[in-house]
Image (cartoon, rainbow, N blue to C red; front, side):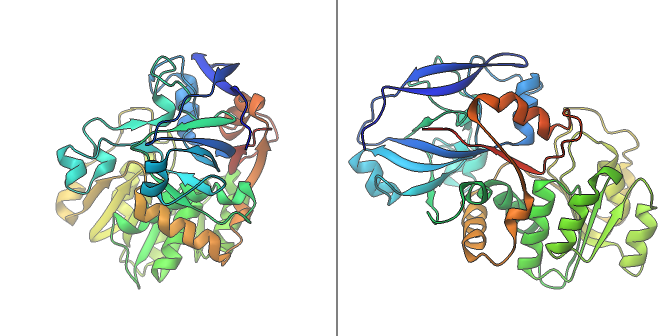
Length: 365
């Protein structure tokens, strides 16, 4: 294919400031590649980057959920990744060195020099890192996964939140057939967790949300949740006790954003010896009412969850390609590349009468 000389990209130049720029397409070595972006998912951490909460370098091209077609690739990269020009791929979020202790121990997502595409500054060559762009650079250390080219881009790009569901709600807590799982928060990763737990054979799945989350809770039930709880109008602890015959949940997964109450309350929802997974970021706020003695007395295991690894992505892609569930029900908004700020603000519930579950940018070419 004939490539342009530049790529339109939305560049974050300051807090709450995105500017369109034409950036030069980089040269490709034998070990790297170039991706033509079909869709880029909008993540809650995009909002934190936009607001300056994450204190990421600026200027930088945001976007770390890229789906696209290989536009150019070096020979060694093609052999290593098993792809060629024209193949549709999902790109993993994190770049690892592959040589440090965590990488060699199988925990490449905890790499000592871990980087995330969207947080690499424009000043670092070749500059075209994030996926709020028409094209992005594929680093020699990146990981890509082939994905069905006949899927709608807005559906295929959900490999990222669905991958998080598999890793956070199944892999990390070792959710097994027969388990009861409580999922705190019905956003895209909460709904993805429902699908992942259903695939893992969980016997009972309970999802909590706000009154404003009524539509999301409806989708949770469509995806296989056995019960949903409106935390503003129901006594959540009593309902969970009732639904679990007084035992509590084997696994509690907190994927709510910013709200700190679910963290302390999770200790009441989990059974003796159960597991709590904390995956929803809270803007580095302290947790009021967190009573550590509950962890001791119930011998609770608490695990943090950051990012997705290859097994989560592979399971997500397999499930999307199976077309077993109406995953497209999660998708609510497509935005043009130049409307990236509107996409972020919509996800953050800052646009009146607009409720986003999953959104993505669709660059024009």
